[in-house]
Image (tube, rainbow, N blue to C red):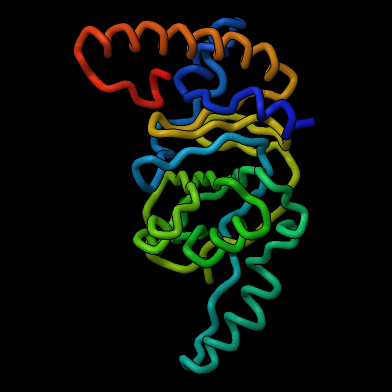
Length: 228
């Protein structure tokens, strides 16, 4: 159902969806904190939320050699602690919405973001950090993050659970809620209100295009996709 509802939002901007929420009497809901923004210009997404939660870990990194650390990270940390038991359940078009603390690490990076995308994710939102910035930009998978960090997760952040309501940027987002992201940030629409919000958002989008198209013509500007 969520994927079908998400189609109602195709081509809509975050600003339009914001208007749609206002139109149904929800002016103080939905807008994710403006600290969570795309890592590169032009990144955008629209789809149902696939929610995941991480937490600060109390597990310590042992005093070991570099060779031992390599094995410890591979065989223990990323096999038992910072795991992704949920990614096999991703459906095409899902938006991974990760509630994560800022523990100074880039929980989202070039490898796992591309892996999520290959498994179906159309975008990723995190209240934590992202790393491998240049590679992530080159890969083009839409990533919206609160922080740009450098470190891996060992001794910092661990996986907790998935498929539950999460809080990201001051907004509660439930599995299946519609999330939209572009240069204005991220907005979330509760699934139960999504069809009505899309109706008014579409109205405002079409009105905006019509008005701006007239101004383009007066200014002698070539028409682009934003006014067609």
